[in-house]
Length: 151
Image (cartoon, rainbow, N blue to C red; front, top):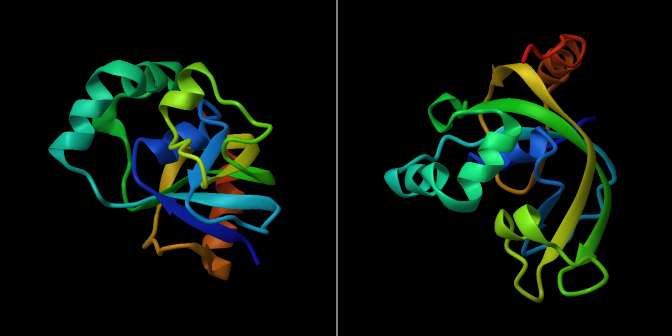
């Protein structure tokens, strides 16, 4: 069964687009393999302000997305979790990666590769932690992976 994680925007799209390689969390994961990336519904003026300037604006530009077009309440892509390492260890973030994650010592960095941003978001309700997608959602995700994204 496919696993999923809900993230706030713009971090969900940045991870699914491959612009953000590491998802930093206060807890580790033993999950390895494909994980569906769900964009939560939360959105407020503070997040929008962060998206319009500084590191998040640069990251969104690199992902070729506009803050106003960021989908919420939907699966936006997938990535492959290949490792989970403590922050402050062997992985030393730099530049954009450092700016779009919380690298405080004592946290964990999930190393995500082979990210795929869907051409169209798949509406869905999210949950906290790592959760199981339904068989119907898994079929929708498989179909989205077969649909090329147009740039």
